[in-house]
Image (tube, rainbow, N blue to C red; front, side, top):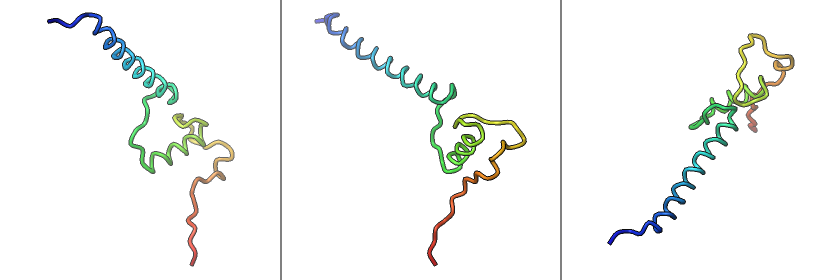
Length: 86
């Protein structure tokens, strides 16, 4: 006995909704990263470079090719001081 076609309609809807949510998630990630692919497996170096890029350009994905830093950048030091009690 064959499967009635009415039973395949819900499966088609479920598969279609998985596709819609996957494409939607990819679009949201791309839009939030200024049209670039999302970063993954970020370590401490990557996070520090993202902070530096943000301080230079105002966006986390923006990069600058200027050889001279903007005014005020020389005093905005990102280094965190280590607090130790001796």
